[in-house]
Length: 127
Image 1 (cartoon, rainbow, N blue to C red):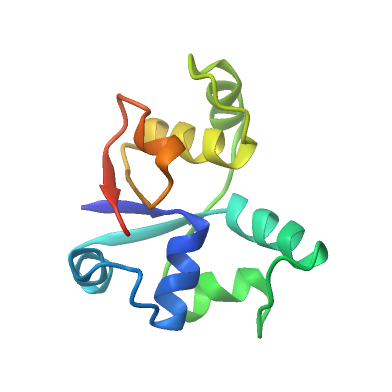
Image 2 (cartoon, rainbow, N blue to C red):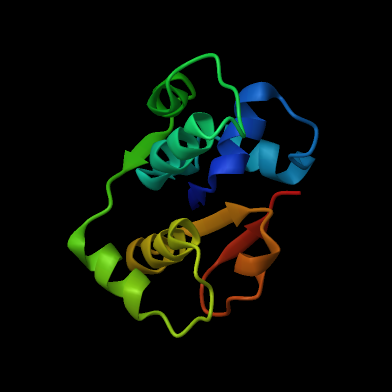
């Protein structure tokens, strides 16, 4: 299975946070699954760091590499789809994640109620 992790899932995984449910921990750890993290993650975390809403002991992009995840760039297709989604949700990070999951046939792993309501994309609840 190909997974795309939302930012909070990456943070929970890296910290060993128990908010990440056992099923998701097993799926992320399963070597038969490929785990992607969007380029939106360091962007989103960088903004939160700058605003003082988050503290982190390393650079956001290092979370991808140190955990053996694959970085997923945001390309023009993703941007165009994110902007054209028929979804009344203004968060650009969530829109990009959904667009990437749709475009790349990935299962989006998250604990975000706003995304949960979006039909048409494969999802796993992480909380």
